[in-house]
Amino acid sequence: MTAKITRDIVESHLHCKFKAHLKLAGEQDSKCDYERLLMTCRDEVRLKAVERQENHLKERYTSMQQELTQALQTAGVQGAVSEGPEESSPES
Image (cartoon, rainbow, N blue to C red):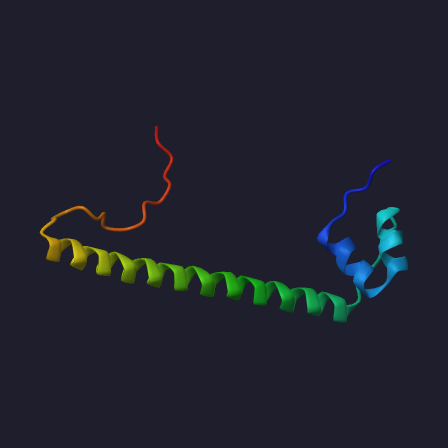
């Protein structure tokens, strides 16, 4: 039998090798309040980091697009840059 090694099992191994062994064996554990709090905080931090990175990339894309548009206009090229990142939309 092969067990799927998940993030939870790896984190358990870092804290306690025996706990990771039990999880790989399929033993169920009940999470204490502190562990649930840590998981909630970790998830919130992860989501905030992803949001900050997305905002940073959008701002950077906009500034690069403006710089490129100005450079192309200076060179005499018109309409060579699209208006924004194309979002994927389902086509019929």
